[in-house]
Length: 279
Image 1 (tube, one colour):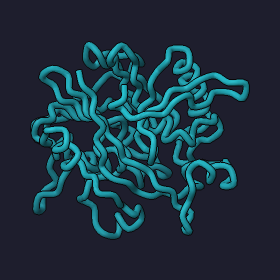
Image 2 (image 1 turned 180 degrees about the vertical axis):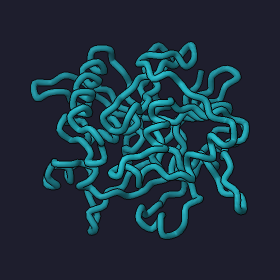
Image 3 (image 1 turned 45 degrees about the vertical axis):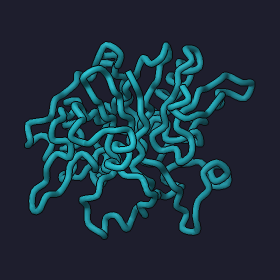
Image 4 (image 1 turned 30 degrees about the vertical axis):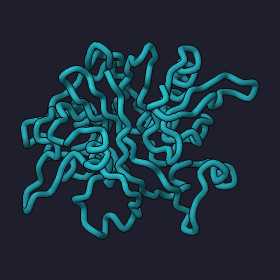
């Protein structure tokens, strides 16, 4: 097995929304905002080369939405899905599986492309994986979250016949070396792949831990549907990561790809940060 970082560029989101009730005077030290109170975030996907399978975890925001939509998010950076795959010697047609942690637009937007008047799967040879509980949550969204669930990103996957579901059971096996963990605070039934790799456990954090700046337990995003549930989940996952020495793969941290955690007198803190290729 080989793991590859797939960068798809950066975007910006309101700092206050990203840190919830935490004052700017605190979070601005780790994730400084610009003059418009916007912070830069990565859209870092993961490519898993596993035998005959090439598994892509999440797809970034994509490029099919209109100019008005993208004007809200200030996309920047040179990396794209295609350029990052090419740098690893792959093409999108080589991808056999697209694993979607959840269906918010910055995680699933690149799963579908616009071809003329048609919306088609961006990975024509891949099986797309979600779970029935989250899928139903996304296609029948609540009023607070529905702006994050765009029909153009979601329904074409099902209409293509390429969609399959994973049971929403924590620890369910995806492959011999990949099990699926679940979190329910950010959105219903978000999936976190946990990968056995070089004798270590790599846990893909999705939006449970967007960046190292979000490590203090109260630093819960305003985007989270059930913040107290997130708080409980984060405490449990942080303790497990310390106890078992997990490597945490960070999807949105603009600087750090991976980190480990340690227990200190002042609570759980970052132990080390490093690139995926340094494992």
